[in-house]
Image (tube, rainbow, N blue to C red):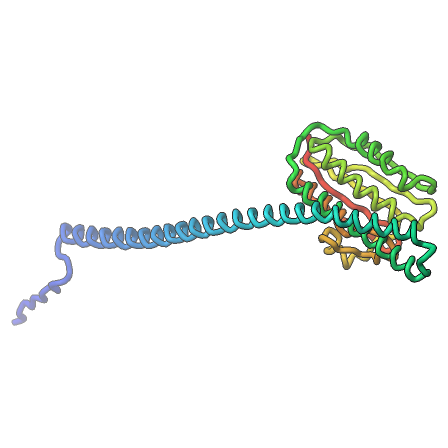
Length: 293
């Protein structure tokens, strides 16, 4: 006869629905615990990153304050030194002029030539000091904003510069220009520098042409001063607004290399930017932006 064989169930396998439910609940709790641990790890990592970023921001803020203080001290030093240099320069220029005027008959040609070189160089240094003082004021001067009619401003500056272009065949082509808001004295300095440059660098052109106008966008106005003068090579454009940087030799055109640095500083203080475009011997265009009214 065949006997009944009973195969026992494995002790680890659940035998009832309640045991199955208990096992599922344990797995669920384990899964929740794993998720919770992962979230904690991510949260701890994020907190550490935020803490590090906060520390870095504090360090950068402190460095920015120290840099600003250093810049202010440097500008104050430059202003003080430049101002104090005026007195001895006036003395050198005055005494050398007296020597040339009163003792020219007792000096030989070489002596007169050397004294004239001294006078020329003191005059150049005087212009440099004036430009350094203007650069310092452009960064330190308190801004007094008002609505400005830019077209009238350019007309006024052009008339002030009349002695620079009088007797030359030079035309100012003045387009319509939207009004803006800014510091009138500082923006007057911008156009004085740009128009003076155009007058200077068109010296060899006959007729010479200077154009001033503007292009209006949604959030800004782009003003420009353009001429048909000597221009410059665009491979040196990065030097254009650098302090004491010159793209022409002193023998070609006089200057200190500070004028466009002043323009850039003033435009930046108004929340705009400035750049230049040119082609050698075909003129140059200087653009700068200002916010719309």
